Image 1 (spheres, rainbow, N blue to C red):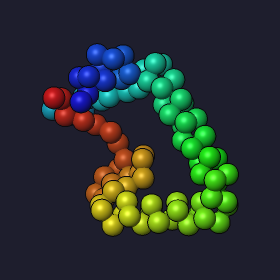
Image 2 (cartoon, rainbow, N blue to C red):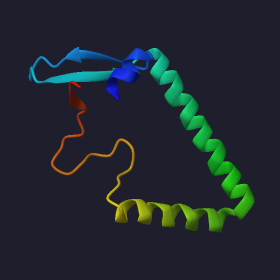
Image 3 (spheres, rainbow, N blue to C red):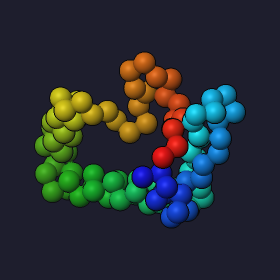
Image 4 (tube, helix red, strand yellow):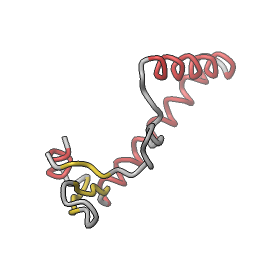
Length: 93
């Protein structure tokens, strides 16, 4: 997966100076632009859902989706994982 993101110019890879077995992946300018576009699309979807269902039902839908994500072992994007410090050091593919 990381190789495809690097090829697409969305991330860059550099060696981790502390652990030779890992690399540090960083968003490029193009990757940051795409992330911004994704955030804008999610905001538009939130607004569409709220306009379609109303504020209270949209809130209930969001809560049900979070409960389902958590029940299936998921986590919010960017959240620290158990036992981790939130760092994104990734082993090379």
